[in-house]
Length: 296
Image (cartoon, rainbow, N blue to C red; front, side):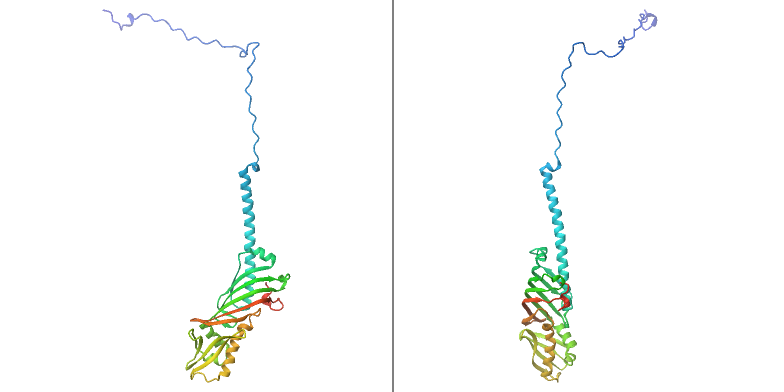
């Protein structure tokens, strides 16, 4: 048998021809045949003109809002500055008058700038700290002023007018004690405390061995402490001596208040004495008349 795997028994193999190579072109590439017309190019769309920023309705609205916001912010800033300046000037005048710190606030409407330009202020509120009013200790004032009209030359101390002023003044028992002790000779040294009695409307000046019973009253636009009776043996001074001393003390309140302010009413409470003062159609003093009004 012949061995099929024996190379001598294999048929002769033919040499494989190489793959045919495409002929290489020489020279420029062939152009279109003669007489050939190229197809027309497709029409190109012209770019649409861009819209301006201010031609967009939304952009216009945004610009308007921004402008309004900026203008409003500027006006609010000027309003707050002018209001603070006005309140500071009035507070300085009040503090000069009462010799105590004070807070002032103008009415919100109309805006302060409009009031300032017209020189007509609808209303303002003043509140003192409650330490004192001049030499009267323990006094606190709550004041409402309406219809203030400044004169054209008010910036140079020209004054003006006030339609109405209402002041509620609280005088504490402790303040009354200090005021009497500091301001009234002889009697003040004997007084150790003050006790109020709302049911009888009286104020009792206490001493070591007795007391003086007084009744707060309004007389001729002034607040007075009318002596009613003595108790005990602590006071040997006659009533004719004590009454003028108390009148001198309380008269400081009305005598030193400007604008013709007068007392209207008085009431005794658990903590002291409450009184109301007012004035109508008052004239604001000029700076040469009262230096406290120089800043207004």
